[in-house]
Image (cartoon, rainbow, N blue to C red; front, side, top):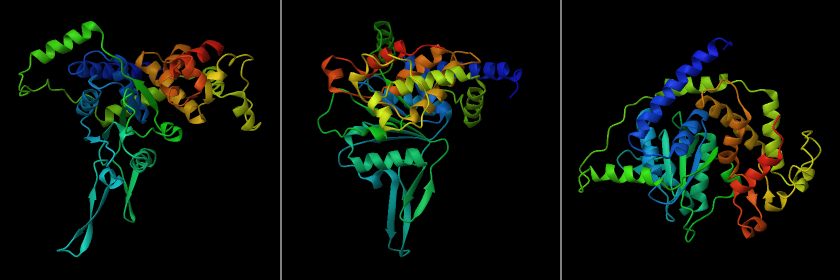
Length: 347
């Protein structure tokens, strides 16, 4: 795409994004960051980990996203007694035919809502995460490709830990973004209550219908527009410097002398005691993709430092393993990321 074509592509993408936000606003009040995060991951072709207490419209937002895209949607409730076959499918013996037939599981859909993924045991989590990474499922001795696009949104409840199985760090790294879903503002909650009060108490009133404004071709258009956003080499070095700074010096030394990226002296002072393990190169790749998409969402044809900083939080917050000192000092991942961004010089 040449320089003259980029503005036209961005203008068309901006109109499509505006239509998506308008349609989703008919169902979901507020939660703009969550909506933009869902759209960004869809454009990037990645998966999302949603964290928020019950009742914050996480399921409603995902269902609405599937509706405006016209994609097949499945919701899977993760429980301690769930088996991998309940997710991926299994072989069924048919007595009349004297042979096995394949019964595909609910994972064979475009948009998967993995509700409370941390309530299922490790085998079930691994089955889903393998499908996320390989985009295929093996049943018996045959491998079946999953539909394209394939988009997983897993939810976690941050206030309940009894009877849960925490996702290992290596599996968390497979998620492109981790979005935190906050409580609505008082004005937004007032609108939510008004909308609820306008529907019959027996639940018979249908929600407002949404128009399918983002088909497969539209997703391809947005991906092409994101790829056309200019990314200067200085911005690439800035992003890599941020990710490298998440790694304590001992970890960088142990990794060998292969990397020549220099970190600004003192960039991690006062931060490394709060970090046990930093982010992998997969985080640098994700940060690059998401910074471009953020610039696209802001209507810019180039990536700025503000795009990088905005993308850093959802990209890094689940990839940094905090130390006990961070917990003792009341610091979460976002607070540590803020300190890192304040230390790494902007080009």
